[in-house]
Every structure is written in structure tokens, then in C-alpha cells.
Image 1 (tube, rainbow over the protein chains, first blue to last red):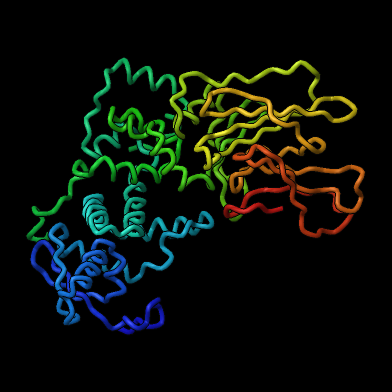
Image 2: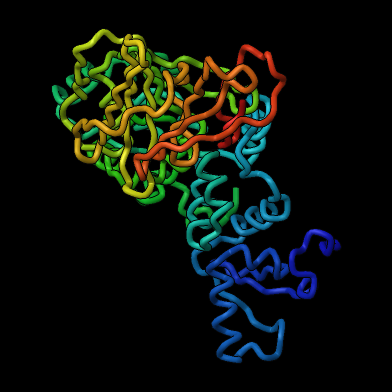
Length: 177
Length: 238
């Protein structure tokens, strides 16, 4: 696949970088894609400085915290990245974006993607998947959110009751679970 | 199912509080107020001024506090259509601090509005964030019913939790355009009765400097009698 037209740095469009995941899978990735992951970028630049990688594409960058299944999805997300994080201009666009975010699977899948994006220091991806997870709890009840995140409420019942009374207006209009 | 499922980190309870913070920062204020009672750790997280700052980055454009005659509304704007999409909840003045609380204050008392002795003609408010001082400021312009259109402007700083009087509004009474906040400034539309050609312009208060400035509006047909300003995509429009 030719990527030259979109590549901000055409001279390096053909360069490939090999990433090795936690389950020992090797991924050959275009440099432009790999450089979106700041952790990889940093590693790559350090290697360059050390001149260890003087022989070009032979470097293998280990990613001990990222599973191959997750990396594959991150890479495919990267490839269609362009404007996915731009603020939606209207309601319709927001709905389209929501649908797009939904395609990234269950909350469990999103946790994988978020953890990996965080480890890779992949900012745009992190924001996107954070929003995708936030979509799942938007407007849900406190009980739902606790269950969703596996959290046990640790307020004394009277404390919580007092808070709910004080902020009763904030608890109106919650969706049915 | 993938065979290496176990090596992976699928449970939501494994997310660090840092990551939880960035997920929650995508949610609107009213909902965050509910989430403060999920558990103590979340309450502390959401009440943290750092979180508020981060949250604000996503929301300053979409959400704003609107004050009308001592009632307070949180309004969501559909940005392109620039209409009020949802009028979320009218709350009493004492709850204003609830919003303040979530955007970064530890104030435990509602804001007391200062009183004024003379007969007032109209009151307009503005509310915004001064990124220079990292402070939220609420401004009240009171126009008195005197012949010379005298005004009194008071500014409430969340940081100091107090009101102070600042320079009077330099022009005639600003038109009602509460709640507009752009680029660190509160703009108001001003109408000059004795200027028949271009009666409208915008006067703004720079929240960091606490000084006024003004903007000429682009050319518009003379004789146009209705004009309004608003915020679109982070910019002022008329």
C-alpha cells in the first residue's frame, strides 16, 4: 500500500520498523505509523544515537507490555486516524463518531487498548479510546458505574445520603441501567 | 477467544487512577457530580484542581455557566448551530458553588452576591477562566437608572473567594449577552444610541488584566437594528 501522499515526511515513507510484542510476535510497521507511538520513537532515536542500528531496518523494538492482538488493532486504528479526534461540529457528526468509537469493542477490549496506548505514549489513540470508554458510562447511575469499574462504594451510608440530598439536581435524568 | 487472554489486562479494575482520571475528564460536569459518590478515591480525584484543569480543556467550549438574574443555568451549545441544545438544570444561587466546586475550588460556602443601594436598570454577568492566574472569575455589571448610565462592576474571584470592585464599564449599558467567554475575555455587545451609522461594537473585559478593550464589528448594513454576538468554535461571531 502506498502511503506517500499522506506521509508528512516522504523521504522515510518506505522505512519499516519491527516491533516485538509480549507474546513474541513480530510486526513490521511503517516508520510513519510507529513514530506515532512516542515510546517507540524515543527508543528508536536512542538506538540511532548509539549507532547500534546503523545497519538500518534490522532493529527490533521490544514492547513487553503490549499483546499482539492489541497492537494489531492499534496499528489499524493509526492507519485510519486522520480527523477522528477533531471536535464534532454538530449533533449528527457526534453520533457518527460515537458509532465509530463503538466499533472498538467491549469495555474489556478498550481497557487493553487504553493500557497499550498509555504505555506507548500514543496520545491521539489514548484520547480516542478514553472517549470510547466514557461513552459506555455516560449518564448511567452511580451503581452502574461502580459495577462497571468493579469498585466498592466506601462511603458511610449516611455520608452518601447526605451528598445525594445536597446535589439532588445532579442525580436527575439518569438513564435506566 | 485468543489463547493468551490471561496475559492481558482486561479488567477495568486494573486501570490506574491516572487513566481513570483521563477517562472521566471526557464527561460533563453534572454527571461528574454524581460520580463523586462512587467512592472516596473518585471523589478526591474529581475534586482535585488538576483534574478540573484537564477537564476544562475538553469542555470550555461546549459547556458554560449562564447566570440570569441570580439563577444559574448550565447550557450546552451545539457548536455549529449555535443554539441552546439543552437547558440542563436551573439551580439556585447557592448551588453555583457546586459548579465552582467541581471546576476546582474547595469553597465550602455559596457565593454571596453583593448588594447595591441605588435603583438598578439592568444587570449582566460574565463568567470565565483566567488561565494566567489559574482562577475562575465571575463579573457582574450593574447599570443604574441614572441619566448618565452609570455602572458598577464587581468581580468575584474563586481563588480569593471574594468580590472586589473594578473599573466601571467604560461605555453605555451592555446588551444582555451573559455567559459568553472567548480567549480569556468576556465580550459584551454595546449599543451607541447617538451613532446612527455603526451603533454596535463589542467591549470586552480581559480577565487576566481586568481591563477593558473594544472591538469594531465588521461592516454591516447601516440601518440594521438587530445584532447579537455569540461563540462558535471558540471564536466570537456576530
